[in-house]
Amino acid sequence: MRVFKHWIVVAATLGYSLCSYGSDFVDLLGDITIEDEFVKSVELREAQRSHVNPDDTIWVTIRRGFGLADLPDTVVNRELERYIKALPYTEQMAFRARMYLYFIVSETQKRGMPTELALLPFVESAFQPEALSRSKAAGLWQFLPSTGDIFDLRQSSWRDARLDVVESTRAALDYLQYLHNHFEDWHLALAAYNWGEGSIRRAIASNAAKGKPTDYMSLPLPNETARYVPKLLAIKKLIENPEQYGLKLPAIANEPYFVRINKNRDLDLETAAQLAETDLQEFKLLNPGFNRPVVVAAHQGSILIPANKADTFVSNLINWQATGKPLSNWSTHTVKKGETLKSIAKKYAMTEDELRAANKIPKNRRVQIGSTVLVKDAHWQSDIQVAEADSSLRLVPLPTTRRITYRVRSGDTLSTIAARFGVKVADISKQNRLKSNTIKVGQRLRLTVREVQRTGLRKTAYRVKRGDTLYTIAQRHRTSVSAIMDENHLKTKDLRTGQRLVIPH
Image (cartoon, rainbow, N blue to C red; front, top):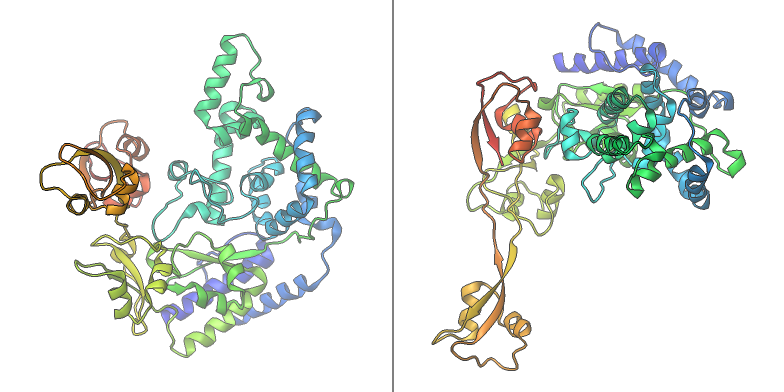
């Protein structure tokens, strides 16, 4: 019953914060009755049925908070024309933004930042929270793994906080504030966000040494960075006067789209969406940071649900738990020697494809011994423990290839050479343009052979020195802050001189 009450308090406080505090999130302190929750949720439901006032949309709030200086029309209008030529796609981006804009705008207002910055995901990710670039930048704000580490966006096989709507927004605004404090100019801060702080510093120093101006327009920037701020200012023009450019903006209410629910039990994502009576795809767009189909309580995770589904979630949760059904049937399995994904899947009455999908394991990859995989266990009633939740899944590295030259020896045949190097006779013949299988002693053959990397994870002992930080240690050993924290079970990034760490590579 303790767990049951905890969930009710969460939801009740959630309803209260919506009606009284706007975008404030769930606070588990205090005790509000179920009756209070339903009264407030009805008020919320009635408020959301009313027509969206065109004078009080999120776009109006954004326009009121504009504060970025303009750039020459010549550079901004070039980008504006590109957006106008693709108006359907621009409108699609604006529609996707409906789920996140109120929260992002509210966060910029709390910090006293120009509201144009809330439009930056238009440029970064087209407001796709699950976006992943070729350079491995991820999320609405396109954080690289290393930058995500610096701003406490943890990345693991379970969860990638770079995709978390709330956490990535916090980190992005932290980063932009830091850059603005350093460069004292929003254009330069934005350029540094795109190109890197060090790159902008060097460009400024180079111009200064030559007696040239050091403003954004005067710096020698790569094409992407040179277009970055003009793109944002072009979006600003579209939002400022949509009718002038034929842009139809969706009527986004000036109120929270989502609320956050903290939980102390494992929760199946599909079950959560079902309880909130929300389309699973919409639910995943609000919660794209979860790499597995379960939110593990051991990670102290929370979920986002549509604000207008708060009371529905509570009501359905009450009914669900009254039946005694578990909120999750997911458990973990440690891969042992001799096991395959197929044999593990069979053990838990899953298909191999289901097991791969739940753990995001590509078709052509195998899992290392000792890895932890998520499995569906119909008989499992407990939550996944901290040690299991902190365990990682490691894939066997793909084989690499190298070219060698082999001199034919006495007794060699194409078949024996192929068997020795693990290649096909046909590949040897094709690579060397052989007309037949006849070879002669001393003949040189070119071979492309597979080379499998070591599957074991190398670890190094390291003692913390004065001035060390997790980031500098991670950079020195070519690993990540998250990997070091996970390996050493660190709860904070604070280090002490002489502390012993195990560094995974």
